[in-house]
Image (cartoon, rainbow, N blue to C red):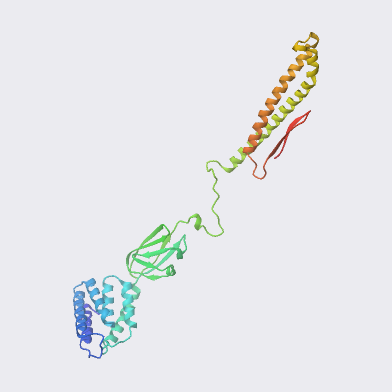
Length: 333
């Protein structure tokens, strides 16, 4: 059907409304005249190639007169504008529109037949687009094609789309991804929105790799350092215990000799016969003092190393003992 016929069809449809007998009280004479005037203006705009203006006037007329003829003219204007999806819907509505008091003669039935024929011709021209989501669940994502929202239940299903450049945008919380695609008439395409997976979106059954508290120091080096420190700790405790034993032993001997030296050397003045015994006594004093000093330092250092480098599966326990004839340290490790 050419443009001239389209314009004539619109005029004929409106004239049928205007000359219709006053059985209907829904529209007054003024309303009928307004619809007729709008349809005539729309037909003229269509002939002149002003399809947007024609579309708007046809739509205004249809709001008052629900007839197939106006739906067919609306669909043709949508096709001219490249709005194939909306044209598809208008044609479909025209084919299923139920008759009402505005249907005069056979004009509206003929318009329905035209609508079905033109719909069949349009169907293979309409592009199809499928949207797929990766890295997220479709029910958690908000998707828009250009300015139209896409229900989450229809993500993954093939849908009609207008030809041309289409922009698909997806939102998941604060994250936004988009996919741009150019559709030609009759083309089928798939657009994929890829969301980067975070740890909270990791697949079930998988867990994120453990992160070392200090990434610069590998875990095995930390363990080796701890083991070396504990070895030196126990060595220090051993040296300290030996020093304490030596100091305690020398102290016991000094205590035994102190009485005889004091009696043989009054006022710390020893005769030549007691010089050897006095010399031994003095040496024992130094040995005892050095033994206690080394023992104290070694034991303290060892305990510090062991306490600051505990084993993973057991805690060290250290005890010192001192007897009249011996001293030492014992622990669990």
